[in-house]
Figure: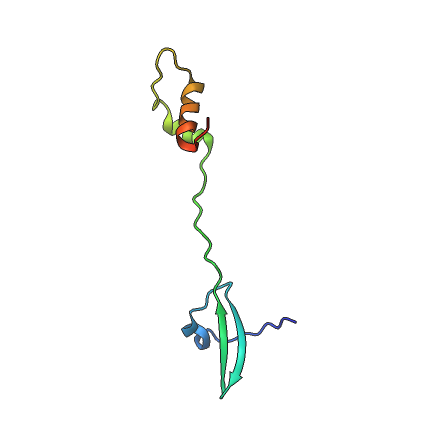
Length: 86
């Protein structure tokens, strides 16, 4: 069974709680509660992905191909270096 109660923030601020954390009361002894605090794992900052078109505009002209090299050769060389693709 789950019960939700509101408690003044000032009463729990010293515990360093954040959204997503959980409290578990282990025991009550001598007028105090012994509690276990399980902190939620932080959400990693994920950089917004750019569009392929934006990358193409930014990288335009940055690769110089030899006369016998094609764009596909240059692309696969990049993937081999970056991802170990064979």
